[in-house]
Image 1: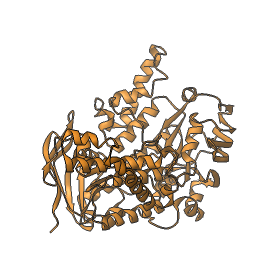
Image 2: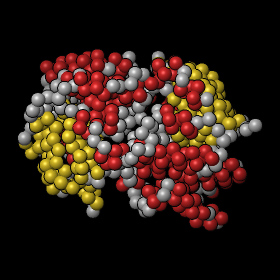
Image 3: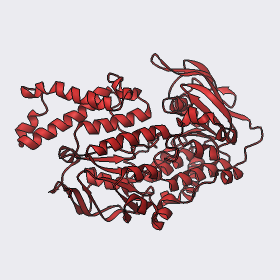
Image 4: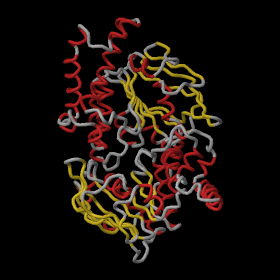
Length: 529
């Protein structure tokens, strides 16, 4: 019988009057993989924060290898073998791939020395390459290189490159690699495939199954049920901070309470389209003309031209590193093209700053939300009206009126106005980012991966909100990994591949075009994940 590696019981955590966890318990045996599912706001990330030491529970105990770690900080728990990743991948952007991996390997070495030697003096020595410690440097580099090689050439050929130059999927791989370099006993994975297309998801599943085969214990938060079904020995379903089901993957996936709380009602593309008829001959609102863009010597866009009309929802699709997020930067003025023009209502705005473009009516809901985590929900919302505040009493009254309208659109935020934005779930933060964008009274909202990392139920709510905003006259330009969902509400779409447009047309045309699978979805693998 496998030994008990982690046992947590009676975990409770409240933020103000909101109970995020209620008498929650979880255990993991050596070599076991436990999946955790549930809608956004169920308490999954709060659970990881408490297990890893980022948050302190209001009550409960946490035993790791039989040792009570509830009072230890995250660095001490990592030293004891419990390491985590994050829903929005976190790498040291300006460090190289190898340096990121070496940080993980160094953590593992320090942890090993600290456990073996004990005492402040010996722990301090572990930070400095004196004597025997210097001789370990080559071993650390070998370990970092071995971890990189386990992901193939995606990392092994980029060891000297800065992490910011990697595609989104490769940054996720690098974060997992850095965690593995510390030789964890228990790995906590928070949405390891969020934002990945089906072929990338399939590849990551294969990688995680290989890790599991080595005997590594894991807790995995994931919304993609097929992945959880294949990877987990046991699944725990959560809702509103409580455990609603636990057992084998198949049994939990068939649980009626889980289906109601987690899956919601599937979107029917035909129904979505019936309520979102495209505007007739829309006047051009935004245009990109023959855009060439670069990061240093690396060219991203090659003559990119596209447009968004008044009242349209237009989606931009493509695999990772195809140039989608860079397109957003060009539109918002965060990156200047080497050549080409950005036009707003027929006027050139290529040389205008981001703030000037926002004043013209362009707003942004960025990838990974980018809210202000220490500020309250209300403060985050009002930050969206920053360009309007101070313009006079009438404008300030208009801002308050818009805030009331936004809170009617997002009633969940109204219940949490005083709560710190960073303590909310991913889905709630997405709502907050959308509410903030609306406060600038935009004519166009640019949304970068609005459904990334969300449960099916919250994906449905976000897409319904996008459709509702569009019906009120707001144009939407949306970058989205979930091609079928995006095309289900869009009027038109473009498909990028290596910085070049390879497909464009109406949403219905693209939905039925088999070429989109090769250009965007990466083949037939894992289409259900």
